Amino acid sequence: MTSVPAILTEDQRDCYQEITNVAMGQAADSLARLLGAYVVLPIPRVSIIECSELNMALHEAGSDDSVSAVCQGFIGAGIAGEALLLFNDTSFASLASLMKYAGPLNHQAELELLMDTASVLIGACVQGLGDQLEIHFNQSHPVVLGQHCQTDDILRSGNQAWQRTLAIEIHYTIEHMNIDCELLLLFTEESVKTLNKKIDFLLD
Image: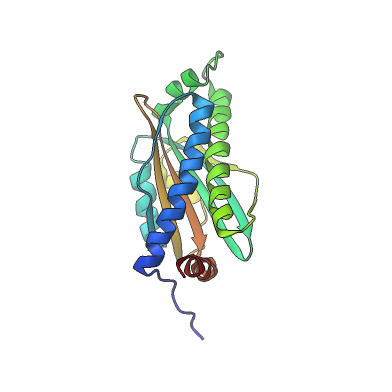
């Protein structure tokens, strides 16, 4: 028996966007306090996409010459997903300056800056979503998918098993600074059915 493909109604999409706004605001606040700088909040994009469309979204997010990426899985209440942070490599010098990093900006230093940023953004955003949906998400250890590499290399490292996924795209920038990153929250197709039930409860 073929399963029914995951879909979103307009009301569900709007609700996902609203709870994402709250969650990413919490994450931005955490990052702003870490950096002592203003984080520009975007409008998140919520969509059900095919694997090929995910590849296109990653290409758009990593449009610079090279990117660094961190992936972190999360699971709870029958819902599983991955958070993927793409960090434009041109951002490292500004990030080091804001964090008052005094040492040489070598490979290890950039890795530490990348992991610190990923920990704050992913952790706060996933927790913010979970709090609103009354789900406790357990998060796996973050994994570096690559440093100073092309987006195609990230795609080869990532999870290509999903045919369709709920994708929430959040583009973060720091005001007046050359810091630019993209956070993608990707939920498995099976998880969308459970998530939609939670969303429908909020809409009632």
